[in-house]
Image 1 (cartoon, chains in turn green, orange):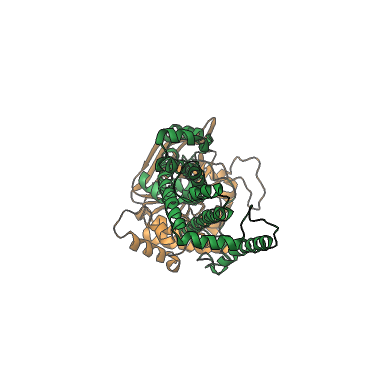
Image 2 (cartoon, one colour):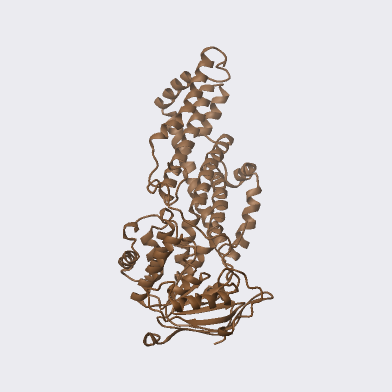
Length: 286
Length: 252
């Protein structure tokens, strides 16, 4: 886990075959890959909806177990019209955003502390590994005792869930930065701060973005759990409330909104990735 | 030529480097003077890269005196361009002057890469990347330029053009150059002085006076080539010399 890539082991004959750089087959292919194919990603979900509707219409899928897509659509309109859904979404989004910012910042900061020095690693990494092993949904009772049943326990749970993927990936990203570039930085007389800014952080970025995607996924997951345990507003509350009245249509609306929000946040990260990592000669770019 | 061999830019006295039991450099002495072009030849494991790394300040575990005055710049075997910085930003990296960008573009123009200034390093060909690496070294206006087998990964044709480029740049900027290589012909074409390193000692030293551009069939180079190959343990026709005692003319 902690290969000292940054602490360059000096002075050996350069091992391995010499690095060759063949001219790229498509010199301009690293520019924005075609975005015309994006709609294709929607084909398979659409097919599922069609099959589902047919199953409901033929009575294969009873309303008691799962409402038909048309019913779900009508319910969605109702919920939007009476303000229930926009309100629930707003509440949930706020919780996720707050938890995400809090957890993301602490995860990345801790990764920097652990990644940039041996002492930092010794101080931070064992604690993080131990905390990571906790089933954090099992912390909910404690969180309720500590923080009551307001917003704090929900946001804290999201923050906790978010921080680990970002911590682990950023830490691995920092340690994975090519030691030869650190050596280069020394010959260029870069200061420690410049080394971090120009070499370490951008070098860790691809891995951090992987962590970002994971943590956004887990953020929504943590929120669902938190909102179903104790809440009087938000998507999880709406779903839980609907269960009491066997309103499968409302439950499906809530779930769909969750997944749509999940897809949306993922799309944001993809966009970020494409911008931030445009230097990579992407293997998917043509 | 003697006129420009003015002051010393690097002085090495009794330089020793051990890795555990193994001694890679044996109490080595070497002076490098301003503007001279030295080729350091040696077989794999002879310690030539270790010596270069010591001069570059990348190895702090050496014993002995290492006195390097002035700016040192390094071009490595792999170009080591920072992949997430465009070519011009790579050249300007760590350049603490107000007109860093302007200087970077001038350096790129010198190596013929003006039109690739905004490219990502991973889209460069091997020759382009190596030229960018040279530009990054030269833009620091070094008194000592260390080249660690920078041509070994290039194809034969590209290598010839990059050799000429290095000679041009050297003639214009006059840094002292220490070129580490295992290619005897490369050393003969480029250097004023050739050193052969063997088991951590300078086993052979020769000056080359032939005017540049040099042709491989120049009599001075032909005879020196034989001597250098012998010093490296290879007979001119390619046969391995098992008894590596050295030829009489080697002891000068």
